[in-house]
Image (cartoon, rainbow, N blue to C red; front, top):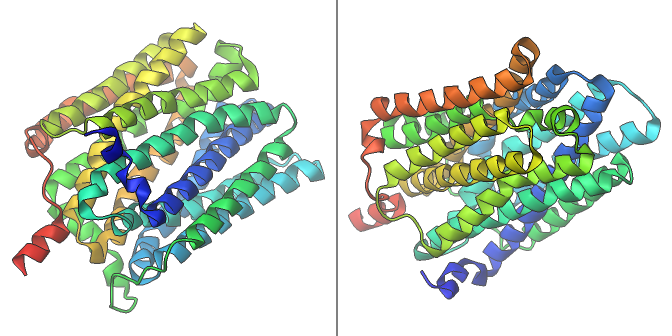
Length: 414
């Protein structure tokens, strides 16, 4: 794939608007995460508090994400995204009020994280479902790779910018976060209106259609559940404020660099995938990416050197990007557009469960066993998950090529 083909997706204005909005919102998310994590640990000095922050995001997320997927199928997906970003503006506003008021109540931070989780419940499935409608089918692989590269570029820049702005005060970070989210809302509104893809009225039973579809497709089920358990056990990012403060002694700026390192690895891998997308041995690539994620977690947990820790996190992000790319391609190519929002919601449940519950699991195990043992146990558990899933899902392990898009199959059959 030559460079003009890689950038073909950005030549479509609606996709360019969406990609810009996603970049701004991701940048805001990363900045807020760094600031809130550092502030929360400074207030409590308790690793469990960081885990509870993840749980505060997870509970509203898991409660709302399936209905959000159906709303994404029944409504204009642009407006769903705008509402989701508005909810996250509220989160930044609550944190800003906390700083200005001088309050030190930790529960207020958990409330803010809950609003953020509610916003993510809507933008994650909607954002996944909207992309295939913004570009022609032949450009979709490029759009996935460009989306991944821009997302990870924001993941690289956001933590570093957040750490630097934190030196001016957490209120500066939260104010900048709110401004970026307002920019994202404006960019989404610039996209042409999108007609709802599902004609049926709201019925609770239809909310579960995504679950029924995923469990009927073993390749899709294997891909998203592999990510769930791998990140659930192997995710160490929730503990980065403690590593930065107590192990590596690098302060908030160093924390921002550590938070950016996985994104650096991921954007490098996403750029490579955009240039030379995976076409063969899809299953092997996916399991290999998750295995690299687990091995890098082990190295990071054992390291006391800042440079080695950065290198491990870069490799961790590169391995994770391979898994994300393949999972996203499988889910979107296998799903009819009429239920794409609901299936994307199920995918988001798995992703959100691995992220937020993984943060809680990391905080709880660090409290029980100690910081380093918790991360090492998580890395080992990830490798056990890889070995187990290779036996449980042989059709995924032996998968050679991506399937043809389901919409194309349906059109051909008609």
